[in-house]
Length: 267
Image (cartoon, rainbow, N blue to C red; front, side, top):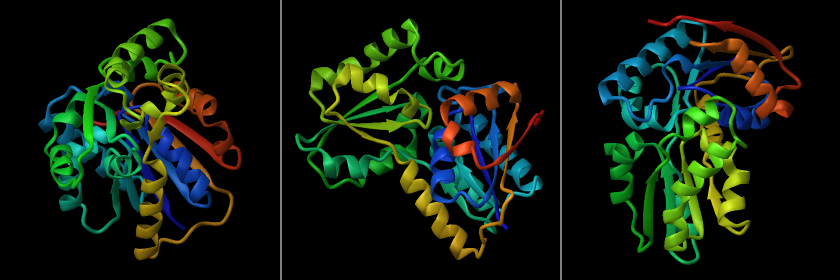
């Protein structure tokens, strides 16, 4: 049987967990939300790298045989260090889906909504340099969005106002494709479509991430388990609140799984 660890600064990684439960429902999953320290998007590279390593080591001690770094900022700043320190297990990261976006854009205008740290990271800028495309890329940092999502304010007036402010440069540029460069942001898809229009193409890489995870599980011969399947939810802040949001945001994915939960302190 395989136990897969998924970690994020908070609830954003639930978008990846949701897709993992759709594609590979017969595994056990351990979801760790570092909500006591969310968001990561404006923290230092050194802090993000150390914290990500600490969380990954904790997940392995908890029995995880593969890890998904379900946080764009942690992937951008720390995944190479994680892979160097933990070479014996599959480590899957997430990154903005810029390559599929530039391929799919009809008018060659693509917006990228991401955290401040993701946009300024070496990994992100190396990705931009690798593109052989005449697409115009419009980056925008989604400052303030993650705390509102973490507190469940998806439909609040404050969220609507702030998101419209962040999406305005995309409207002015006339983009036809938007890359969501933070795993929290797919929860805003309905509101984004309301603001930018239903025809906007939205690129969320959760499906591709889980396909890569499945390939790595096969490569490492980590087989799927028989029922009962378990999801363990851990939070460094409030595990009950985490599970409550998970049941609200991805209810269908959780139906066939036994759920365990605990608040933890990870130094």
